[in-house]
Image (cartoon, rainbow, N blue to C red; front, side, top):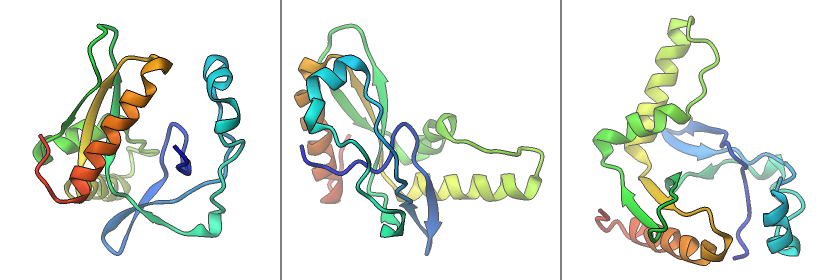
Length: 151
């Protein structure tokens, strides 16, 4: 769809002026053989974001959940009160024995959960249904950016 990829599997982020922002890192996307065969030339051979690009505001977080029941793509907004719990399994803390660092880590994730809308996306891992998945995510992003309530 022409978007620029700024992360692969993990996102490096930080609070900057009280807002969560993504730090783009240069990397080479790693597609599985079937995905590479299907997407081939459409997939960028490397991230075009130089590290000097700076921080990018984080607009939303989409937690992906594969399903095998053949159901259509579904997306739902995670209630702000549950967002912290939904994000925590994806977090990486490097030294839980450092009480001060753990406190900062926890505070940062609480800020992330309160400042950035979190969505749960359920989808079938099927490249033929990729357009449906992308359309659903784009529609949710459009609704979220318009400050509309999305449930």
